[in-house]
Image 1 (tube, helix red, strand yellow):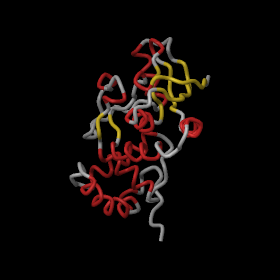
Image 2 (tube, rainbow, N blue to C red; image 1 turned 60 degrees about the horizontal axis):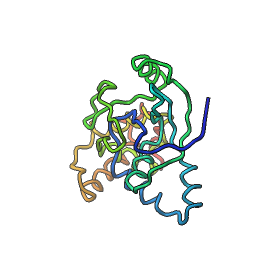
Image 3 (cartoon, one colour; image 1 turned 60 degrees about the vertical axis):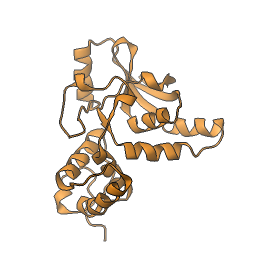
Image 4 (cartoon, rainbow, N blue to C red; image 1 turned 180 degrees about the vertical axis):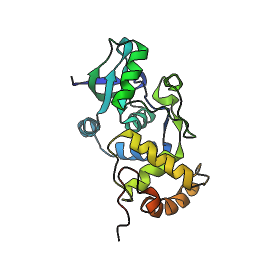
Length: 202
């Protein structure tokens, strides 16, 4: 089943513990550009939040956590969502087992440690910052590798950079330096087994 509707952003349930706040800030800038209600509506519809209906009828985010958090940070309260599947009849245990099978559950903390689904935040605003997720996203945007086919691939790239790039990225200035390392690293043979690897593009 698929159903397109709208939902309150503060009721959407994350299926990830972390996101990249630099990536959120970039999406806030992009989201604020369309002028007028009609333009904003078109823009948001083009980035509709992908969800799964879970126990109690709650909507769990399957894709676009960063867009959803960006809009919430901008003070927007509702967003267009697409309900990809209805698993609301399942018990919590069976629901999370099915979400894991579908590739929609990624409970990695800001240190890259895999935790239980119980560690997931209840709201988007409860998600923690992992700067390595931002590093992976901006390195991809620079053309160093192709977008992986699923969210697990994004976490694989973040874990890869966490192993090879040790920098303090808690400031914009601190974030710029690792980018100079991450781009050639992503094209090196060290990354050849990662999804979206393109190699040296000379």
